[in-house]
Image (cartoon, rainbow, N blue to C red):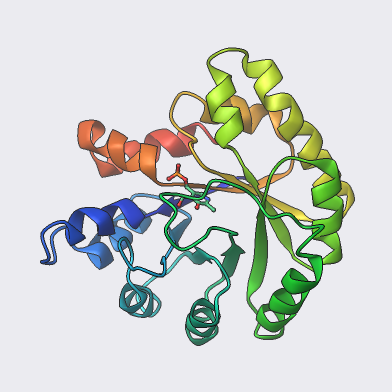
Length: 237
Ligand code: PXP
C-alpha cells in the first residue's frame, strides 16, 4: 500500500498572507487526517515564510498519523527535528532562499555529511529519507549513508509526462528497482497531481509513500479538501 502524506505548507502560506490564523493550520492538518490522509508533511524553511518552527512544535502533540518533516539539515533544523521526534525526517539539499526544492542530493559529494546527520536521527528513533534524483549511482551511494529510505524527486516525471508518459516514468521505474535491491524504502514527491499520479503509482514498484502539497491544495479549491484527499487516495489503489 502506498501512503499519502499531505504537505500543508501552502495552507501556512495562505495564513501568513494576512498575519492572522486563517486558515488554521492545525485544524487543516487534523481535517486532512480525518479525511483519510496517511500522514502530514511540513517543510519549515529558514525564513519561515511557509510553515514556522512553532507550527511544527504545535502539530507534533496533536497529529495521529505519520508526521514527516522535510528540510535542509542546518543546526536549527536538526535541533527542531530532535525535539519533535517525528516518524520521518526527509533531508533536502535546498539553499535558504529557494522557491521550492529544485534538486536532489549529490550523494557522492555529501555521502559523509549525510551519514553523520542520519546516524544522529536514527539513534533518536527517527526514520530518515533522502531526497534524490532517479540516478542509479546516486541511489547506490545513498544506501551507503545508512538512510532508511530515499524520496525520488518527481519534477522531471511531471514535466515530461504530458509528452510521453512511458518515457517519463522509465528512469523512476529503474530507480525504484535499484533502491529496492539496496534495501532502501521508497518515497516520491514533487509536482505529482490528479493527472500524473496513478500512472506513476502503477509503473513504479515498491512505492511506500508519496508526499503531495501544491496540486492537492489547489484541487481542494474546486473539489473541497475531503473530496480531493479521497480522489488522490483512489489513485493510489
Ligand atoms: N517533497 C519535497 C522534498 C518537497 O520539497 C516538496 C515541496 O515542498 C514536495 C515533496 C511536495 O511537492 P508539491 O508541493 O509539488 O506536491
